[in-house]
Amino acid sequence: MPKYLQDPSISNSVKHFIVEGYRHWHADLRLDDTPLEAGLGFTCKLKSETPFLGRSALEKQKKEGLKKRLACFTIDEHVPLWGLEVIWRDDRIVGFIRRAEYGFAVGKSIGYGYVTHSNGEVVTLDFLKSGTYHLESMGTKYPAKYHPKSPFDPNNLRVKGDYSEPLPVDQ
Image 1 (spheres, rainbow, N blue to C red):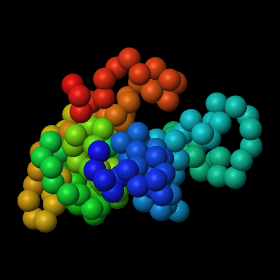
Image 2 (cartoon, helix red, strand yellow):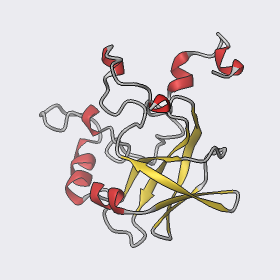
Image 3 (cartoon, helix red, strand yellow):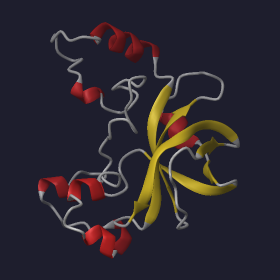
Image 4 (tube, rainbow, N blue to C red):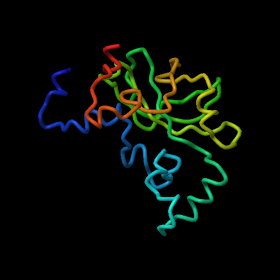
């Protein structure tokens, strides 16, 4: 692990935030994003009758479909990603990276950004999974892989204390 990450003043939660897929306010979530678009619909209690501010808007959005979705991408080359890189899907611009870092636990550059449909249609999980992606950084396009879940711990085993699976960087 690099020396700057061993600094005790840097909390572990900040160091591993991006590889674990935890959302970060102002980068992954802003006032113009909804919990459904950010993959946080499970926090909204839409299956219950619990009233909350914005419930009708979320129910309408769920019924009509999402026009954008937060997606996780990795690139194999060690290229610094800073955010605002262009997300290309099948040679069409579909979004921009909002937050990015190098994920030491996965051994790759990792970025999160919202993907829209280039024709303005609904963005489904099948749409996200079916495309060929590139991230453009400093004028160069790099092949990218879409991850439906965090590439670090997609089955959430480590948060439950199960360390039986090796880290992605060790595989």
